[in-house]
Image (cartoon, rainbow, N blue to C red):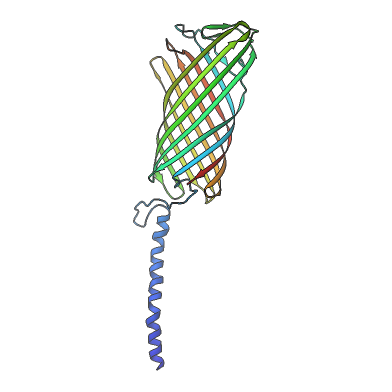
Length: 296
């Protein structure tokens, strides 16, 4: 076979691979841009689904442990006598511990690409046994100074928060929404020596405005932060609720992550009038936390 014919055949069969290589090079930028959440035509494309990615996880369960510092202020008024109760500090006057080991459970569900529902639960049980340094009016009872007072506080919250991601890329997401916290608080004060006791309780739902952000720093490290707050006055009731959280997490292996963060919660309520439990209640709880997270 002549050499000219061989060269012609070689050129014929070499052309398709060259064309394919050129086509792949031309299409590469479009795929890289799509991985960041946008196509070459600036049309939004959801980030690639990946287990362990805080931005694309569909379901996540987080269990945390907090060594929290607590501050409690109480005033329980006699019915029909506003401001007649004595304002006391739970830690200083009633003997509540200033630091409380505490746990929280949180469940996150992502619906679609941008909608998230978060459910969290917190329970705090506190008790104190302290000799009173002053006379205290506690509801319908008057506890005299130098008597030993035994008291307890039972606090529970369950929050439901919905957010919509108004900004989302492969490595960052920011969302806003609304939440509601179901709150239950019960306090008991007693002086065993004089057989005196009084119990006050309150329960209700508190709405909040929520903001949250997530930053996937790398395939193993991520940062998340959120805040919720609302306050106001309705007739004779004034209240506010705030809940803030920030953390860094390390993706140990799919789908498990561990992390360290900081949480702060503050609730303030005051009821003046003829309600079932008139008075004032303020609780702040904050401190560093360790947590474990499993996601799918």
